[in-house]
Image (cartoon, rainbow, N blue to C red):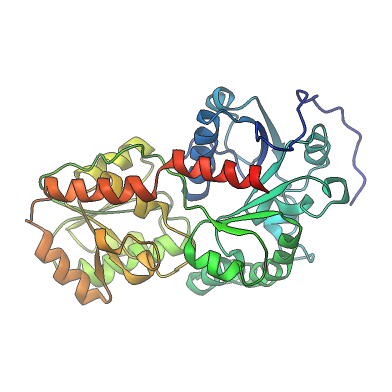
Length: 393
């Protein structure tokens, strides 16, 4: 590790050792989790909220790179410490993955050593110190948000920019090697059953705890809407590809309106939308505005071409929206197939959309959602399970 200027760091509150009952916890987040407005930080923020409500005192360590400090986090955590992400690192050189090497701070290690509370590392991104000898005797847990080398390999497949394509390919290779660091974690929490199946072949103590999310109850409204909706962070190639598929291959074959909500769409997506009078593109919407579109839509359409992790957007539309049309990779091994209309090809999407465009969403369908979702996707239950696993280790 390179020598850096010696810095005086804040002193953390004294903490009892983590022996039997979990009372205090370090959480290392790859990003500032507030506002919770994209996939990974949604899981982190609502996990923090659920653990706080369960009585856990949290010291949050967050790498930040553009999102300002959030006073809302001070309400949920005993202390919040931010660390600048080392974005000056050349992404094309070095053996460590860029997403790991840029989240490397001596201050973080110093602060983690101030007490003996267990540590939850959020994503492989934050695991630079997972195998550090100074943390050898600590209870260390890792939340896996994806099988990262698969995720980056898939990003490479859908990327058109040659430099990004080369970076994603190289990053996938580095992540596959670096993943071996998980042998130093006592507990690994997979976000999906598919990920659990992969991880438990290689590592011990792998458990499935699905995504934490913003929904405390089902808010889907009976009735009908007059448009279909797709939402996602369009700067992510996977989401832009899904939106382009809908704009170019599905809604060219129906006149039913489609509203696409998401920031930083590609030039290709903008062009595809501009060619159709029934497709509208909405950028720079906040979380509340996107939730309103999900609720108002007659149909939420969610194809994906990357079957990694579990898609938080799927959970959100099932809690908040009316009819949901997906493809198989979106729902594979989620247990949510019974709540969705599943299409395989573009023609299937068109047929299902035409069948649903005037079909009211009923109170009985809302009740079915409540039965399934509150049993399988309760944040409070997931928090209790995480606490129980930590206490039982």
